[in-house]
Image (tube, rainbow, N blue to C red; front, side, top):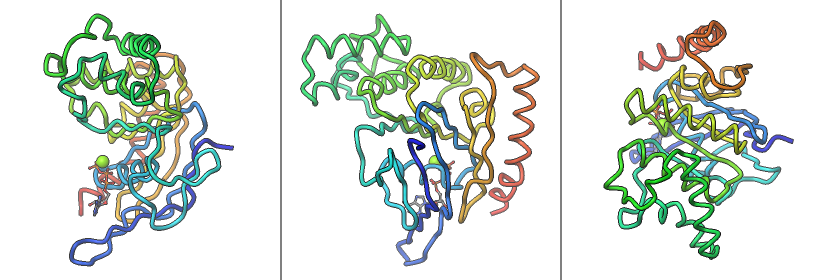
Length: 258
Ligand SMILES: Nc1ncnc2c1ncn2[C@@H]1O[C@H](COP(=O)(O)OP(=O)(O)OP(=O)(O)O)[C@@H](O)[C@H]1O
Ligand SMILES: [Mg+2]
């Protein structure tokens, strides 16, 4: 049984003027436990909508979503979310206190809290920065703390919506490598949203390509048979790039024409 399955999921938004806008329709995808699944699609095609429905922030208006065989109803700690340019760290808490926060809310004892927080701070490469406040950290460091914070809660699944979009190219590339290595260590199931083909091939085990909206759905799923660190200059990487690019090209053109 897959960890997550979308069955003919649809989402219709109703505007303030009462006009219906069908963002997503007949969306079908299955995500296996331990898999890194990238969802790729042009701007406005409905990627965030899909993520919000799985997170439980928005309810589907058609079909249903199952996680571990049970319908998704509302948000839950087993599905942790990291949004684009997310700036939800608490400014009055240090890096380590931010990472510990969820554990403290669940009454985990101080020693264990501290140990777990340090483990995840180390995993995201921030050992030695634990006593700094968010205002003393760079954008990339803050984003890494967000990731450490959600990982510390040991969710079943990580939902990431273009988490590196606001970073400069170098930091972004470092963060991608770090996330790939964290995933290889923890094997947490990830749904990662991006509109960047490179990023999808660097990270994904499978890539679901979405059609341009409205009424968007999955056009096809590409399996990336690359193990370990992936280099953009490898021939196989470039072959995947071409394959994904061919699939998404028309969709981007359609999205631009609107
Ligand atoms: N809360 C909302 N109310 C009404 N319409 C919405 C709402 N959220 C999204 N939409 C519409 O649904 C469609 C899909 O939006 P969504 O944010 O899911 O796209 P996206 O693929 O994440 O885009 P981007 O790549 O730009 O982030 C768009 O047409 C958008 O206008
Ligand atoms: Mg979005």
